[in-house]
Image (cartoon, rainbow, N blue to C red; front, side):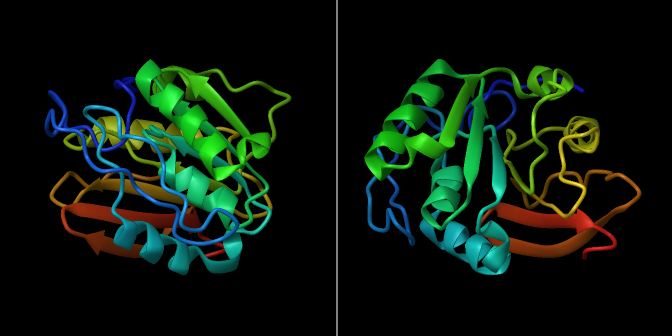
Amino acid sequence: MGGSRGSCSWIAGGPRGTARLPPVRVIAGSARGTRLGPVPAGVRPLSDRAREGLFASLGPDVSDARCLDLFAGTGAVGIEALSRGAGSCTFVDAAREATAAIRSNLERARVSGRAIVQTADVGVYLRRRRKDEHPYELVFLDPPYGLTEPHLSGYLTALDAGWLAPEGWTVVLTRGHKSSVPSVPVHWATRRHLRYGDSLLTLYREDRWA
């Protein structure tokens, strides 16, 4: 499994553009309406519409959940989860500009007390899980668009190696809608596909919970 440079929605070979996008806002919950800071160059967060649709699909699964936001970019998805009542969220991104933005955004949304921010290559991070680290009920995975199927499948396989809560979990994979369909562990089931523009969000659960 290759570890790609962090930040959400990068295209393999480079970012989608050099122009910075306008700040995003928290849609619902305790931090509703909070505008997050400037989007780091090369990062393209999920649109408000996509995040709203995602969290409508997740529903009560967010409440008190331990969350992991990989290729976190601005942290908008994990912060939305915290605002809506998630118990905690760990944010991981390889780009220092991104993790600095996440820390600032957590302060803006007043949810930093339930968050951990890690500057790390996601592939390396997933291979180094500590034995004392609690597994997660909700994982957001937004790798660079254009990654090949082996890379995407590698991240999902790594998550299956002790990162997911045995009592029930959901993994949300965001990818380009024309990108390769990844292989998933045999006991995973596809719960739902959500498409917004060129982004395709796939929700996976263990087949006994789907």
